[in-house]
Length: 161
Ligand code: UDP
Image (tube, rainbow, N blue to C red; front, side, top):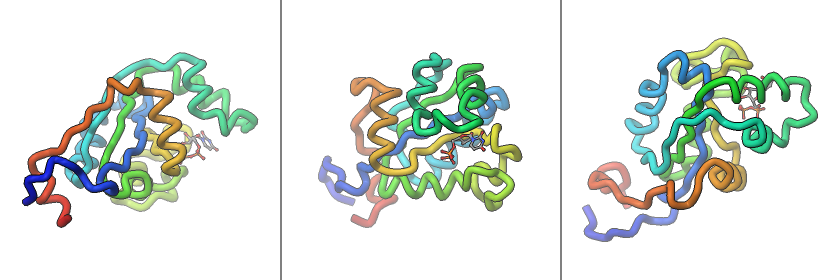
C-alpha cells in the first residue's frame, strides 16, 4: 500500500453509465451497480432523474436519423434513469465488455445485458463507447460539482501500482 494520495492516470479514466427506465422500473439498480463496485470501479457520480426530451435527444444525437430514434427518446423520457460516472483503469472499454453488445440475445451470459435483458429496445443500460464519448456524455448529464474526486482506502488492493 502506498501513502500517496494521487491516483495514477489510468485509474482515473471515467465513463458514463446510464441505467435506463426498464432497469429502474425492474428494480435492478442495486444489482447492476454492484457489479461495477465488486469489480473494483468507483462510483464518482450518481443521480436519479427523468430526462427532458432535449437531454435525451442530445445524448443520442448520433442516432437522430435512425428509425428507432423517436421510440428510443420516448422510452428514455418515460421514466427515471440513473446517471452514473464510473472511474477506474480502462473504465470505458471494460464497462462495455461488462455490459455486452447492443442486442441482448447476442450478449454472452455473464454480461449485464446477457443476464438481465432480452429485447434491443429494453436493453437496460448505456455505456459510453469511447473516451471521447464519455467526456461528452459526462458533460451533458453532470455538472462538475456533482462528480467527486476521491481515493478509496482499498486502492492498493485493487491496483498493484
Ligand atoms: N436501439 C434500438 N433499436 C435498434 C438499435 C438500437 O432500440 O435497432 C437502441 C438501444 O437501446 C441501444 C441504443 O438504441 O442501446 C443505442 O444504440 P447503439 O447502437 O449506440 O448501442 P449501444 O451503444 O447502446 O450498445
